[in-house]
Amino acid sequence: MAVLQVEGGRKLFGEMRIHGAKNSALPLLTAALICDGETILENCPNLSDVDYTIDILKTLGCTIEREGSTLVINSSNAYGSTVPEKYMQKMRSSVLFIGAMLSKCGSARVTYPGGCELGPRPIDLHLKSIGTLGVDINERHGKIDCRCVGRPQGAVITLPFVSVGSTENAILCSVKAHGTTKILNAAAEPEIIDLCEFLNKCGADVRGAGTGTITINGVNRLHGCTHRIIPDRIEAATYMSACAVTGGRMRLTHICTENIQPVLYAFRESGCTVDLDENSLFISAPKRLSRIKLVKTQPYPGFPTDAQAPLMSMAAVANGTSIFIETIFSDRFKHIEGLTRFGANIKSEQSVAVVEGVEELYGTKVYAPDLRAGASYIVSALSANGISEIDGMVHINRGYENISENLNALGANTQIKEE
Ligand code: EPZ
Image 1 (cartoon, protein in one colour):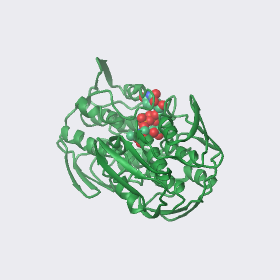
Image 2 (tube, helix red, strand yellow):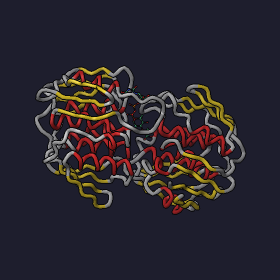
Image 3 (spheres, helix red, strand yellow):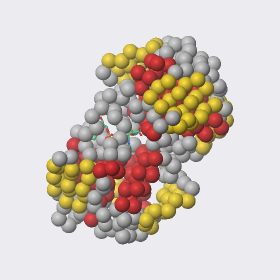
């Protein structure tokens, strides 16, 4: 198992180029299955979840070449309609292959997806949405068999609450449906906009992305296109947190200054200076952070749930008490146990966490239970007094490209040890 060793107490200085967004790359790669011909995806991050998605695409008959951060996918002869369980288990976004395979060939055989354990993560909304499009769905012994006669049928899909993945699956399943599909109470995340812009470049007719109502007029076929993946707003927030807790100064380049907006108030409230220009951000941290009065996670453009854990590490060493309310996932405070081992003073009850900032954290050994908990432990380890070891790099590598090298280039002292 790979373990990240971190020497705490070193200020971070310098420049970091933000990578393409994991949560955009995964649905875009999945959508490429539907295209006849060659698709070129630029700015694709080098992450294990991307590798798993590439494995699935190859299993379905796609050819894929990678040149740095550019992927060339050809799905002309990809008519597979079964994703093996070993791949479904690897990550949550494998569930999106249901919609893509139904659009490609009218059938999809999968099992339940894996992914970060943030409380129960059912796929009932995915299946209900797809069922509304005239697809027969049979679930038996953990296997899910979806088929439709010919193509899916356009319909009105009303999501009872905002779900990013269900919105994406409904879009993927309806792009080549007969007639028009409307998704009401759709997610408006930047990654949804990126997916719809990609699909429209491929010949789809998707309108309203970024609003609560998305309309999809089914088309006969999708061709390939060239598309640049948007910057990763969560990676940016994570490196900003690392800068904030070390009292450092950092420039983040190749960001999207619009989609990073929902987290900026928290950094400024904690005493950081944050300045933006065209596609970069400059952050400078005070010697001691101030508390963040309230972090309440919400669907975009609210505060992103994926940034909740890294920012809790900031609050853990701030002067004063910060309140966190997690409204998206029922069990996304798993990182509190590890933060407490660093010496943080945090009390949580259901969806609320009260963080009493302490003067200093101490190096310790922790195990990352999920991707963003791992990110929060790295942030805490950078500020802690002494050496820390973070087990569970397998989770962290799913969402952060070369994090150890990137941090060391900014003045940190980290190393990956195989144990
Ligand atoms: C996506 O997950 C992201 N993952 C998550 O990022 C992100 O936290 C989440 O959206 C919210 O923004 C990817 O894009 C690969 P949801 P997703 O459907 O689609 C419930 C990370 O760290 N729900 O918006 O799975 C669900 O349990 C990951 O990068 C149902 O009940 O999230 C949750 O409580 C973590 N039934 C809420 O909806 C369903 O069928 C929102 O989940 C689907 C979801």
